[in-house]
Length: 185
Image (cartoon, rainbow, N blue to C red; front, top):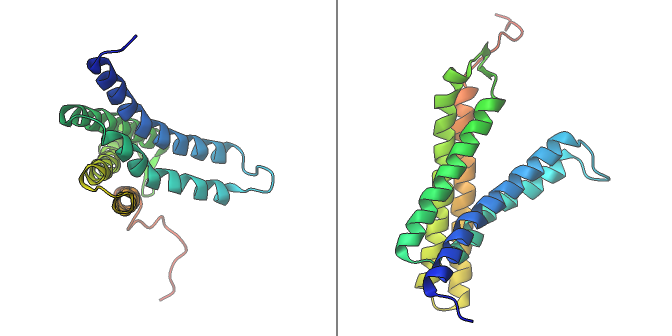
């Protein structure tokens, strides 16, 4: 029994959307586990954090390998779907987590626009790095060139992750003094 090419294309598209979401979701799951369990055997929170960061960095390379199989149209659908889900979920999670801006209590109406910027930066970076990885996999013939291209997309993914952290810090905490001890004159 053979299946139609359209059915294979639908499957490839579904995997192309689910794969990066699963990798980023696994990283988030590790963060949640880390926050719930301070110590897990000999591992403390810092060890779990160092497991999370490589997952976020590798998400574009892993997904890019699959996106290289997609048609041009399906890759754009995957880009939009992954960007919308990652941007929306990260914005919602950050909005729910931030209770103050600087030293002042903040309502979700004040927090949401600021966290939306962070969500857009994070999602945009993930999608851009994955698209670069997919383009590189399609463009290069040898496995060595593909590995170098995937390492490059991992660096871009990592840079956008840290870029999102910098944007988050900028819009929420940088430059704020919460009335610490007075500075002697």
